[in-house]
Length: 461
Image (cartoon, rainbow, N blue to C red; front, side, top):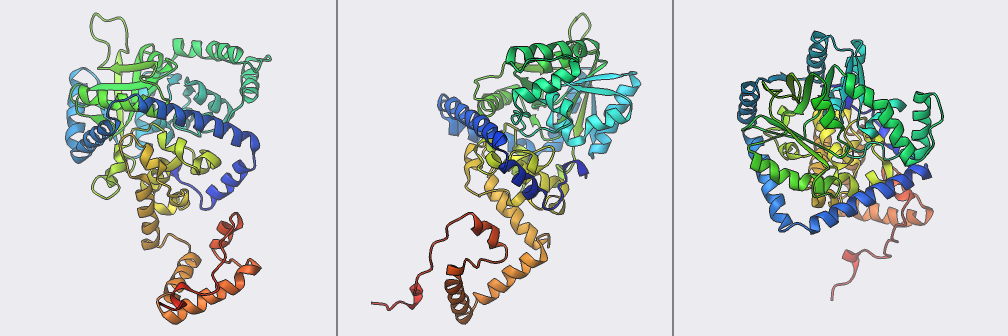
């Protein structure tokens, strides 16, 4: 397993506290996620039988999960039949090494990348840089973060916490002159800086929103057009794909595309929906000479047959982030460098182990909004509850916490223990004496007063 996704115990609370104290970030988060949430609701309202479409999407995604090896084999045969190459990687290190080897074989010095959370997951940029190869993010948000040495904070809108002034400062440093903090000037600056990258890159690297097993087609969506340039201008195109990102047929892909854009950005269809089926053929003038698809596992196989298998249906739309009251306050950085929000709170512990991300299952109010927003009907809040149970069963929870709940359970298992503890709680409440794990929870809440007499002690009539 990769340490790229791991999280230091206690880091969520520390980072979240810093974000909560930053009024600028709080304003940016509220504005961005509220807009994305409202756009999704408007887009869904225009769909006929949205619940039926969600059910169909869930069914076809789970059909793939039920026979993942079969569909992967079909996809590989389809791609290779078109002249492409398919590579399987068990770990992030294997995936990065495969891509570095492809680049080195071609003598690549510059790699143009489009937005891809899978490449973040495997730490590809660091591996390329260690090999003396320069990777450049061409998605505007990702490019801004790369210049600042930061990671995405949202899987759809990676730089939502940045202000125009901060972006202008970064661009000014690159250009060696002042770039005004105005949208037109910033856009023009980004174009100047990235145009040469598109034209001179030796290898283009993209992610994969979905792939079609029947035809070997790779599909990715964007609103900037950079993914289309990255996949067509360089002579070699490398696709980095999570092993579960498959649908059986092109008809099934259309179901996912109808939900993906609406759930992510509130659009009926993104500005650029690109389907690539094999490398450039004889007589064609567009497209790469060489196509490689690197399929990563990184813990996904472990989910195939357990109760968390529905997480493999996730289409990475980000809808759950935009409705989550916890994400809206903490931002994405608290969850770690890759996946955030409810989907990240479930996925990351499953990929790296609960002991390497112990805070994330508790980064939820369990309100169920994430489940309601998920276009493929993943029961996210229920899976978070299951992870909390696993933490107890596996002994991941702190000893003091387990001891406290054990004592509470013992006390409330007898009438005498129940009476004694509730009496002490009623007497201590006026003093504000909430101790243990409930202290921080109670600090920001007004607790109801205990009744003078227990319900069970009242006379029955």
